[in-house]
Image (cartoon, rainbow, N blue to C red; front, top):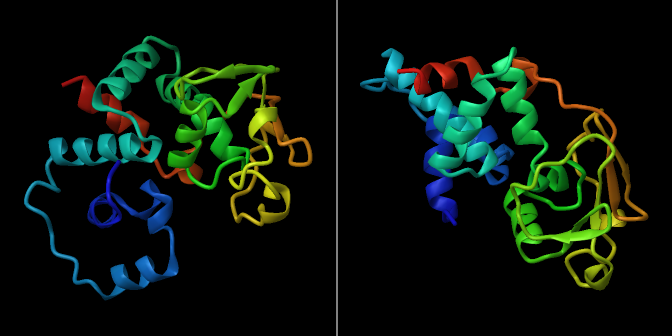
Length: 201
């Protein structure tokens, strides 16, 4: 995992939305004070495409190979951007994070990897597990009393709004996928078409 200092450096290049730790007032003030200088290759098509690709990769915590595979599959669909967004949002770790069952995507990935998460009552350990409409994700009964999840409903004063495609019951520590994620560039802050440009070179 990347140390916090490395995350701040990456966020200065790609934008504060890529990591939860950089979505703070302190980071915003630091950025405001910093003198912005044009970067050497920032104006080139390749530089622009690379930055967008890295932004998506770090936002979802993917390896280069993982993102490349997702992009390749999505590019075969009628609406590649919509398909890529749905594939990334419906990963088990993304759903756990979006539902508020973990404070960060990294924590969500660890929760899944350590077997703390169930899908439709069955324990999973793959963060990349793909959910579909009707699937229910929850915290496994055996770990609900651990410090990680005890009182989670009371502590869930998160500024993150629950997406419309999820129904969450924090008393049951459970969420259900009731729709499909919709891609809107303004809301996501991600430019998938530019990512496809990168992989189409």
